[in-house]
Structures are given as C-alpha cells and as structure tokens.
Image 1 (cartoon, rainbow, N blue to C red):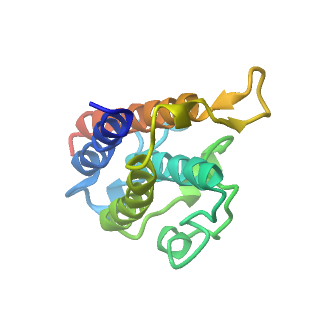
Image 2: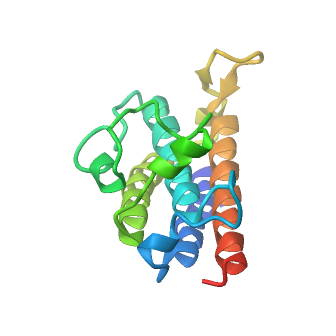
Image 3: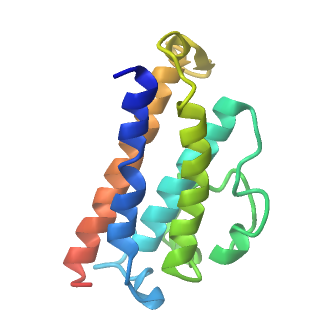
Length: 168
C-alpha cells in the first residue's frame, strides 16, 4: 500500500464514525450534555470538521469550505474562519447549533471530499514538506496529517461515547 492509500484508509474512517454518532439523534439533543461544561455531540462533530477544514485549507493555501457558501448559517454562526472551537467557553459551545444532524454530516462530507482529493495525490516525499514553521521543530505535512486524523478520530469517539451515555 502506498502512502496515499494508507491515508485515504485512515481518513475514510472519520465520516462513518461521525455518522454513527449523529444519525437519528433529534436536533434538540445534539446540544445536550451530561453536565455543564462538557461538549455535546453536535459541537464535537462540528469541531472535528472545522479543524480538518481549517488545517487542510492551510496546507492547500486555499479558502476554508466554511468561509464560503451557506455552512455557517446552518449552524447559527458567522463564517469566521478562525472559529474552529479551540478556546471555546461553555457559552461559545452552546452557540454552535446545527440546524440538523444532516448539517453536521453534510459539512463533514464537503470537508472530507476536499481532504480525500488532496490525499489521493500524495507521495512519500510530500510528507517531509514543512507546512508550519510556528513550531520548533517545524511541522511537516506527515505530522500535520497524523495530528488532524488523531484529533478527528478522538472527537468522533467522544461523540459516540456521549450518544451512548445519553442513551440516544
């Protein structure tokens, strides 16, 4: 298996996990938490899609999918490309209100489509390219792609766990 195939397999696991967490959950329960200060299913899936969109757009030196079209309005938010969930207060978390589970999954599908298109052309050599010099050592494409997948899979797992915890 080549590197593109390996990464496509890894990233291909994210949307089905998110779908399992969201599918069939009533919209009012997407914002439900087991206690104050925790993140709801809707926020977790929105956040994993936002982080992937943000980071892949940066890698491609392109606009985020979020910033164009109708995505932000489907979540009751402004199309602020900096709003990806990092540093959100409990009040900020409550502001993320998907109009439906489909809004979450549709946005993730759009992000996934662009991610998979980028991944399909990758070679081993590409993984060594520096994509972020703000860190010491600078971050390579390979490390960034592992980080994005890790973050996405963790949040999808948290959303699935929360679905079970809330008996949805």
